Length: 516
Ligand SMILES: *[C@@H]1O[C@H](CO)[C@@H](O)[C@H](O)[C@H]1NC(C)=O
Ligand SMILES: *[C@@H]1O[C@H](CO)[C@@H](O)[C@H](O)[C@H]1NC(C)=O
Ligand SMILES: *[C@@H]1O[C@H](CO)[C@@H](O)[C@H](O)[C@H]1NC(C)=O
Ligand SMILES: *[C@@H]1O[C@H](CO)[C@@H](O)[C@H](O)[C@H]1NC(C)=O
Ligand SMILES: *[C@@H]1O[C@H](CO)[C@@H](O)[C@H](O)[C@H]1NC(C)=O
Image (cartoon, rainbow, N blue to C red; front, side):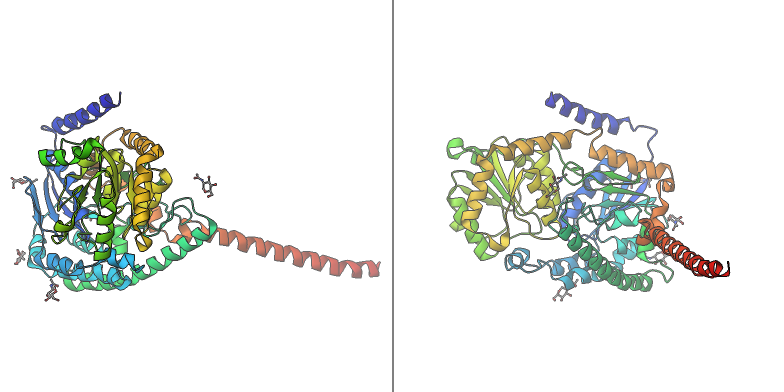
């Protein structure tokens, strides 16, 4: 039954992609991500592949030189931006997290958008690009402000692909409601079901971050005016004019949200059924008395671990009866590895997660990894590092398919216990399979949905009829605080008038009586 559904799912994509014969539009689309980690490129690549199959030309501006070629895709990676990001991301995320510090210092978070924008705009490749013409821009919803300056120069419709699904800035600016009461900040370990104290904390942090963000974007705005055009409006104002938002979330793995019709959820756009593993990997994971294996990956932005953590992991893995496949980039560790552990700089993650002998996945809680985990029904252990990892892992924990650990206080015993719990308590696998069935139960695949709406925006010249006036309202107006204040004012006024009238009548009454 499930298999049947899966086959149809794939067939419909093929049909959809080949149906485009003569009626296809062929347009030039510019994609831009200023994301500081390479994983931001993945959803863009998938969308680009889909759009190229439909006959469009894609140019993709980003800060990571491509490591493969795709016909129809031109990647522009300005050398200044690439260099800036390489310098900037020379970070020790795990080490800082383990010392209970902000993984990225607050000042670094705030200087990034301004400096990255400056680096990108002051590069001849970007300047050359400004001489090309495009029909549509698709901009990363994380750090979009610099690209909004380019959008103003091209004067073409633009969409967001909101890679950090829990980051609500672009969503809320476009007029979809994101009340603090049910919208935990993407950097916090809260769910959408918060206690009163959590809601207080959530509101304070949202407000503080918005305030700080506004200061940073004012500086960025000055840079845009200097580098591009004196007339460029504030990026927040440009942002309101977004045509459509492709949201990297899905209510089965993220939270149910109130989205206007110009938002569609397309998470797992890159997910695909598992393929057989290369022969040597297959032999490794099937070896060792055939008890199964666990897979460890802390994502693309965490390349190596501090010495203490590396030792802790090796010590723990040595005690396991399972084979351990570990995505890791260190070259010094090779000699100390126990015989049941194999490391590799790159591993076919989805083929591994879909492997029937996989017992558990140890992950950092990156959004794409969480979706792959659910798509393949793999239970796991999550140790969040930075950005949205805490929010992602908290949801996985309450959904019951992941065991959450804290790097700040991690010990060998805790990690062993977590791995054993996930493997031996059947509820973890059961919940993972349940989420998988929910995530896969969709009317159209995420890629089809994304292509449909992109072409919808092209067909209808920006599809501005989807926009809501809510995007032009301030917080007070949108949530009717001004109306509530009006009613309170009216109530107070009427009460005053009534009291004055009563006082007047009771004061005049006795005199009348006396006169009689
Ligand atoms: C897309 O690129 C091809 C090859 O460079 C070109 O021939 C074609 O005209 C382009 N399409 C559009 C819509 O510009
Ligand atoms: C990167 O850092 C080095 C050393 O601090 C500096 O010389 C170089 O100019 C920086 N590159 C960029 C693109 O900022
Ligand atoms: C862009 O086009 C203008 C006018 O055609 C030309 O003067 C300028 O040199 C071009 N800029 C770049 C960076 O190619
Ligand atoms: C929205 O963007 C389009 C395309 O750039 C532009 O023509 C239109 O004037 C913009 N609307 C507003 C309100 O800025
Ligand atoms: C929300 O949390 C409260 C208290 O923790 C709990 O009683 C309630 O069932 C939760 N609601 C949902 C929908 O999860």
